[in-house]
Amino acid sequence: MSLCAGLFSCQNQLEEVVPQTSLNQQLALSDPNAATTLYTGVYASLRNYHGTLLNLGEMRSDLWADGLFTESEDTGLKQYWSHNISATNVPAANWGGFYNLIDRINTVIKLFPQAPLTEAQRKSALAEMHGLRAFVYFTLLRTWGGVPITTEPVSSVDNLTDLYRERAKAEDVMKLIKSDLEQSLTLFGGSNAFTTKRVYWNRAATLTLKGDVFLWSGTLMGGGSADFAVAKAALEEVKAIPTLGLQATYADIFDATKEVNNREIIFALSFEKNEATQSAYGSFLVNTTQAGTLVFDPQPGPAVPVSTVFPLVGGASRVGLSQAMITRLTANAADRRPRATFRTMHRTTAGNPVAGVMLTKFIGRVDAGVQLYDNDFPIYRYADVLLMLAEANTKLGNDPSADIMALRTRAYGAAAPAFTNGSQQANMEAILDENLREFIGEGKRWFALRRAGDAYVFRAVSPQYLQQNQVYKLVLPISVGMLNADPKLTQTPGY
Image (cartoon, rainbow, N blue to C red; front, side):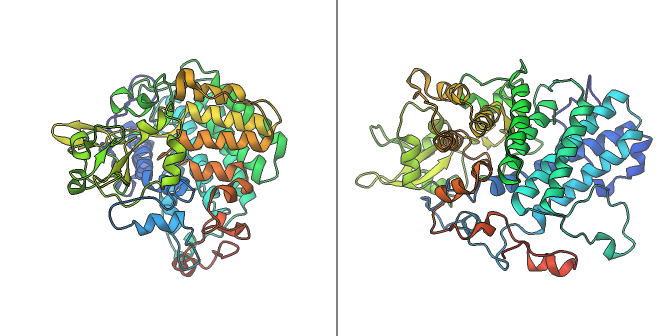
């Protein structure tokens, strides 16, 4: 990827990235093109974690549990939502592969202060990398608790023991995250600039992550009101950025033809034709044979064959929403979000029973006779800011009405249900309900429940799968293979 006007603003050439293993890292100290390749390689690598971010952030929640599907069940995804997890049954091994990404980020952080670029380019890249490293470690912390900390790139290995790393305390991981956030903000200065397609980390993303992090530490790590106040201040700063706001139409957030200057997107993973397309939702679709025998909208009708609406979609219906969840999400027909997110597929037998659900939020578009799954995947968007700000205000004892109603008004229009400020629990339940409806398929629900507090997790997830005496299951174990490979590692407590 070449350097473009302003900061690193060319976003459609990630496919040109040379893998770090084949790149002479020292060349980045003398060749600006090599430095740029090293930098853009981080984003190309991050995009490969799309499915991992979805699974870790959403699949352990109540959202997809006991869903309706038409083919054999996806047993890997079921392992998440059924919490069939133990020391010998680990759904995400090798720390989700995130340390490969961390090594790429660490390499940029180490080399870029001397890279042959302008001072503005170096500072911008380093600001992004510190923000991204904070995000990756925050994902690790939320998933496994204490994890190994490494801030230096692996340049050579003289002895296998050089790679051994013990798990740091969760508190020390959080310190690194917060330190990276501050370094990111310092390096960004006061710039709230975005590229036209917001697929590069930016100052608003760092501030949004800061709100997320301090809500987490305030709720789960003893930070209390002081941390909630920091979260609120960071999120209010994002809210005040004039180039951000809610899209008037919910479906437009995810429209691949409306990604340029999409005011709701803060940071997203880039997917483009001839570069990379989404592949994480194959089990949320339907195969072509079934598409010809199932229908949409049998009531009130007329029923429309699925294959007529989506003639080129190919996938599998191996995970879905339960009838109870479908009913909950669609009970108020004025809410425009469900229709823009999923479609229920029905059989043509008596009563037209629901056969399964097709996730359409990231269905892409038809291009040259193929279904092109080129929607960008939002990591943070303006709706995150509103709901986290509502959460911060609730936990500080303030009224969250304005931010909740902003989302409801966009979702329901004039029929938006009025929100009445109530108890902290009542407010949090309302926030979590909006979060559920707003972010289906975006990898948010499990982490939102966790950030709200343990009690909200156990109320949402069926005790058939997760019981209140299983607090240890809120974080994941590591595999026996990992323990055998690194004698410094210890198992997650409780497993």
